[in-house]
Length: 161
Image 1 (tube, rainbow, N blue to C red):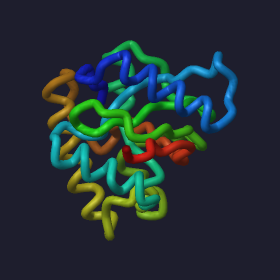
Image 2: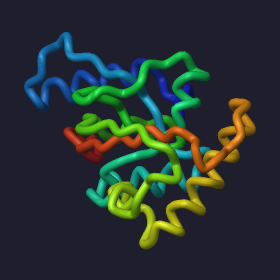
Image 3: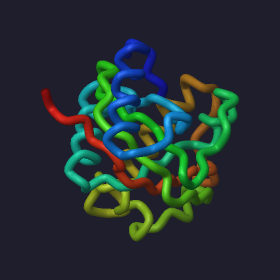
């Protein structure tokens, strides 16, 4: 979910610190700045799971990319993950991209998101999310909904001041 609450200056400073700390080239770019979910509670909780190493993947509807006119993620893409308020907290790098119908997501896949103890719990939460997103973007959830499943690793965490 795109977040426009951050200041570009804050993002630029964060990105420069990331490049310096990791020794990456100054021409290294990020694909997006975002937070997870549609609510403050869940955006911040999912960020917490990423920061402790429990959440290593995310699932999005293919339609969300199409509606926004955004390219699909690619292995090696870097993104800045923020909290709900738009404060940059870490950089993640895509390590694998899988697109499959919602109905074909197994628990072995879903558990990489680090959010649920069962496939049923994962399905319930994601059906709710995709129905809410669908209301906003204009699609209906079905079991055939194409899901973009993105595995990632954290490559930088903002040090606390």
